[in-house]
Image (tube, one colour):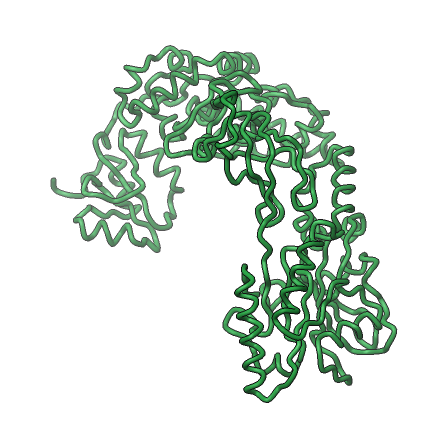
Length: 590
């Protein structure tokens, strides 16, 4: 629906519709004003009065079949009072009271709570298991007849009354209006009631009552012309910013949270809200002790609109983001180009999950079978509390995670044991040092040979390494200065994890000083194998073609990189030619 936001727009819309009705010789054009329920739209289909199918709106043309889930909603009749073939549309929602009670139960059970009632309703209706849907307090208000056989209905208001007679739970607020004054009064009346309603709304809908006139009005490319949605301005309240505390998320991002003097806004008590990041606090000019104006964005998420600086007493305090993580005490860092401040601790309990996922990933320690779901289970069962605990897991620990998990435990124990033999560069990648990926890790492993040598390297010497530079060097030094890092590395050594480079020095540096770019599908090598070979012989692999590129290794279906290489006169080689080059055969006269 098209949205409007002012009384003037209401008047303009209603008057325009009535003027067009007169021009079409349609007299006494009425309107129906209803609440715009904040939920998920569903269609219900009945054959001979029996409920046979239900679906979501989907993309507007094709919806999801959610028949079994809809059957769990008590207010959806399975049999109507008349044997009629009808398709109706309604809004599935969770009432404010039911939503609060459901979240309270989930908290008590240690489950994650829902952010808002609308998302909870939508997620519940789309569950693959209808037994889960049955446990959620879903309700529905039916608000429209989409199609009906062997019965003629002339107006929307008549249709709503007929739906009620059939046994449907119809939107309880439906006001018949004759003109713009009536419509404005109806919207004002709903506005006064909206905070006391048992269900969430995100506006009021103005609908043309005459169904034949609706057909004449038709639709634009986006919206029906016969209805429009009025959006109420968000309710704003003053309150006190008592304190700002910081939460550490799973990725290590530290988010400031405003602790507010509790205040009722749009039907619920608000006592805290996110302040997003350091820049947001500076932009708003927030100080602890300020009087602030708050509202619910979209009548759902509380937010601070502005500071009432004229109310300051001089006792307000400046807030600074912490230099140390509030959870583990490690240094915090703000990366270039990011608004977020992050914890750098390798053993920070708050970010342990993400650290574990990265540590075991394919480009890092490559522990096959230790995916996100298994890590989640290991943490929830308290079988691991840091990265090094992976290497303490017993066969019984792992087998307990799955029904008949013997084979799974065998495979995962083997994968964990094999990861101990990885090259140093994989361990450096797995540690998740800021700015240091697999490529830089290979350079560092090749240069320093052991992790102990790297830990003793200073800023100056690291900065002089090609492809490292001052920012990466600073990140490496700061990382290895942390006590948490030293502790983790010691634990990994005790577990038997290799901390030395396994790569033998290749005497023949035939690719030294040469830059390669890879493109297309290679048959004889994977991208990684070709990269490893080039780097083994002292060459460099780049992701983009430039005048500094010496060779473009082109496989099947090479695209824009091939075109660019041709335009720049870069030497283009096939896999066979690359193979000859790696064996020391000259392909071109220099």
